[in-house]
Amino acid sequence: MAKRKRRKAGRRKNDSRLPGWLYMFFGLSIGLAVAAGIYVSDRSDGITITKPKQVRPARIEAAVSKPEEAATDEVEFDFYDMLPNLDIPVFEDKKPATRPTQRRAPVEKPGIYILQAGSFSSLEDAMRHEANIALLGIRAEVKKGDANGRTVYRVYTRPLDTPEKVNRTQKRLNDAGIDTLAKRVSD
Image 1 (tube, rainbow, N blue to C red):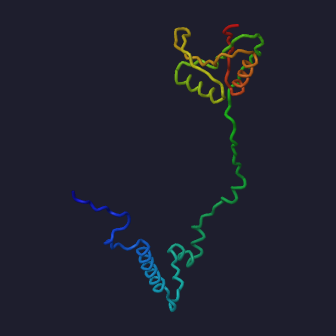
Image 2: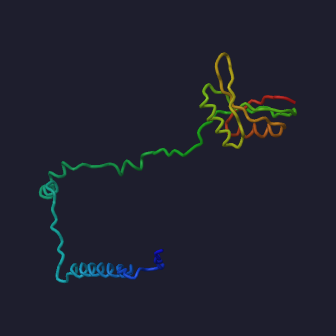
């Protein structure tokens, strides 16, 4: 059998590549030489800078040469006289007007209650209202129903088992501008 030669890990013997730092040094020195050449060529000791000649527009030239004609064509602005007399209304950001909510009598009789927080003709509106209630930290659900031959979507809270929970939830919803109706489900 023929013997195979094993390669040793590391660099090859006949690898003639130069190290990377040498290329970096070479590039850096060329860049510095170009920058020094530009710096030296831009330095000039004997050049003086003169102010450019002022050019007047023809209209101004005519006004300077004929002052009596310029006075008749002159426009006067009353801006600085008018400005202090103007009243400018400043609108402050106000909370949008909400419709008043009805304060219901607190629930005192023990039992299981649900609060109806709205009734909508479109499912999208009901889902949006449910999401607004969820932002208040109250769990709600949408139920499909029928009212006078029309399909309605009612938003109800989850069942609440104590009068304290009912009153607290009803107060939070009323404070957010949402009317509620407490419905007793069972004892």
